[in-house]
Amino acid sequence: MNLANLENVQSLELGTLLHVFAFLMVAAHCLRLPREPRSTLLWLFVTGFFPIIGPLTYLAFGINHVPRRGWHKLRSDVRFGSTRFQTEQEEQPLAYWRALRAGCCPPLAADSAEATINTILDRVGHDHPLLGGNAVEVIAGGGLALEAMFKAIATARHHIHVQSYIIGRDAVGHALLDRLADRARAGVQVRVLFDEYGSRAAYLTGLFRRYNRVPNMRCVGFTQANPIKRQFQINLRNHRKNLIIDGRVGFTGGVNFHDVYLPGARREAIHDYHFRICGPAVLELQYTFLRDWFYMCDEDAHELLVPGHFPQADAAGNTPLRLINASPNASEQPLVDALFTLLGTARHQVLVATPYLVLPEELRRAFRAAALRGVAVQVLLPALNNHPAVDWAARASYDELLLSGVRLFLRRPPFIHAKALVVDDRIALIGSANLDARSLRLSYETNLVAFDPEFAARLKQTLLDDFARADEITLAAWRSRPRYAHYLENFFNLMSPTL
Image (cartoon, rainbow, N blue to C red; front, side, top):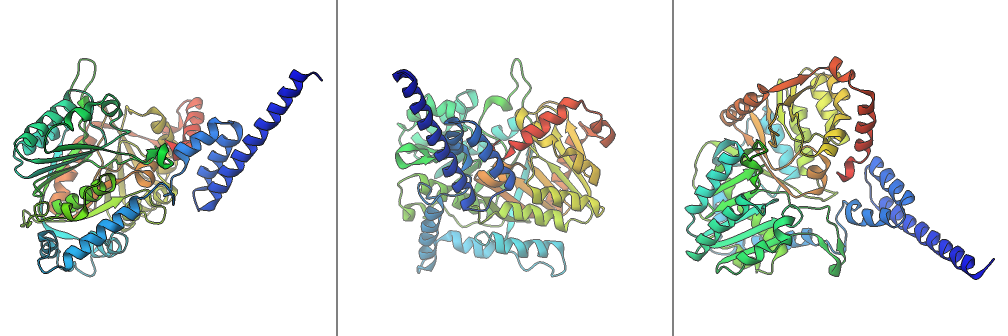
């Protein structure tokens, strides 16, 4: 054997050893904490068959729990909560906490479904009590939502807090930032928290840096990817979409600041739901924003937890609301628990709108169980999806859902990005979360549960208007789909933990 061949053999042996070592490290990490078997097997396959690329992909996308090192969000939340507790104990407690106490609802009827659900939410989301005295407006249409938010921004006198997954490098993104800059120059304190992945086009081209030079205005990106701090997790994202004006008016839902909500030369405007909120629940959105801001910034917690950010919240309506925040914490999944509870307590009807339906096993069984016991379960999905891979993964569960009696409807274009759920004409769930693994397990989300038949009726009518623009999938038609579709569905379903 000549010297060149010997060097090749030695390089091959070294490469094999490194590959085996990387595979064993990934395997050890996968088995260190409980996780879905399918997810573990998928990552072992990817790491075993794709040297270098496989381990790097796992490093970036596969670590879906909170690492002890490089991931301090939970610890930051605890510190912020401790400051909140200290403030609450002072002689002059923050108006925020007085408002929360005043807004708390009286006990619900002991034998009602609402009382059962609220008892469970007390345990899984104890930081956010049920608050009465709220007014909630349904805004059906992304363009209408943007118009309403821009009008609210123009009325700001003390502060504006914006939190969005996507702020586009487009007409809508510029319109938002220009309006915020105008208010900042007028003396209004403006804080903008964007997700660096979702807003990457604007972030990478330096759009936010320009506005950071405006007095009273600060734009900060939310990310967990920082090689210097040994943070490689680009898979964990802040998907919340909250806007708070002076601590008195709030917006939340599915609408980003992006021009896809406006009609273009070659596209229809995306359809979405957003919600305008007044009352004590606005202060819950405020606290959520400030806790995320505190994690990403160097501002002192005492400077954020000030009366100006938490004005006394008078009753604005009759809708009791309860905040449900979700985060990539393996030990706590309040949104999954809330959805499971709502489906489990339904007796007559469940209406759902979601752009993506890639359900974890427990929620897929909850949907099936509700339908099997006679609940009319109807799910509205887009006929044309903006993420084909997620759409194929969702279709893998259609046969099982249809067989159990769940009715699936595909809304005709344009693409619908709305997220909403109504149970028995009495309880509603609204917010930013999709029914997929990313929203339920990997992203930071904000949702609200409303215990109000009147609001549920208004939201139901909005949903029925979109169901009227949809075509139902029948089991017979679904089973006659082409053979290749089965392979694509099952392939992307295997990849669903990473989609």
